[in-house]
Amino acid sequence: MLKASFVKYPLAFKKPSGTSRGILTKKNSWLLKIFDDANPAVFGLGEASIIEGLSIDLPSQMEDMLDWVVRHITQPYDAIMAHLTDFPSILMAVEMAFLDLKNGGNRIWFKSPLTKQDQPIKINGLIWMGDKDFMLQQIEDKLQLGFSCLKMKIGAINFQQEIAILRSIRQRYDEHDLELRVDANGAFSTEEAPDKLNQLASLDLHSIEQPIQQNQISAMAELCAATPLPIALDEELIGVRTPQDKKTLLETINPQYIILKPSLLGGFSATYEWIELAGEMSIPWWITSALESNVGLTAIAQFTSQFYNPLPQGLGTGQLYTNNIPCPLQLKGEMLFHDSSLSWELPNF
Image (cartoon, rainbow, N blue to C red):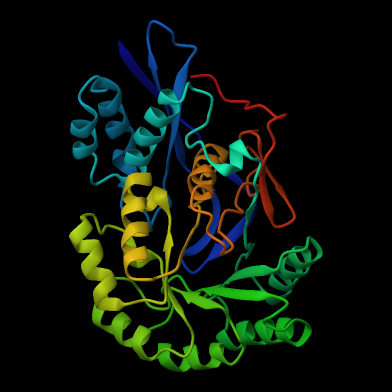
């Protein structure tokens, strides 16, 4: 008979990490295990990872809902998933655990080039918000490691300081040598966004993620239609559930890019719906982790590897924590590898 269990796994940042929503020092994740009680040593593993203030999952209800999953794990899969629609991170955890169990409980969620052919994934280097010196040091560190694509979070310090930082990079590296992405996390008002986009566009940036807050559909559509700088939707996709609603959103806004975070979108099946629609509309996309532990990050990397997407992916978060879970996923410079000589060191639960 199928059984399940879960454990809370709080993650601690090595350094406080700044976003436009504030400073992150820790975040909560939960690990979910599904197994047959006749052979409990073989189990599927999933992760429910939330970012408070961004995920729609209610933090106060996470453990009650995970307990519901444990008590109802023998129900039909579709019935379980239908009950979890307000908890996209738990949807992902359940989907992950069943995929892993189906594949033998070896932490192979997707049999993809990453694991089968040792084909690495190119990622962007993430530059966290902070004071000017802190941001410049991060940039220098990433450049020394050989990154050819940097993503800088903006919107928390003085905008002209951020422009100055970006300009100093451009004085050293042009757009052919270094791709620069910025992520505003909705920090601009609708009134100021056009002017700020014009200033940013003069720096030959690749794109800007979510310049204004989500759920301003008309304003975002107008920005995307007139922008001098390609816009990537990110938070805008959160909470959009049905294929028809997804299609309507993309048709209405017509963005230059979309960014996919499986933990925030309801798992891999939900993410695949976005990928299919984006393909039909010729909208390029890339996948980004949402501060998961190495459990969720590895599953996302395996999923991503299936698509041979040439754009640098946003999967460089595995080294953020002091207590991340050791695993075969390894970062070397800007390339994410699966090192089959390394093993998982999972907590007991």
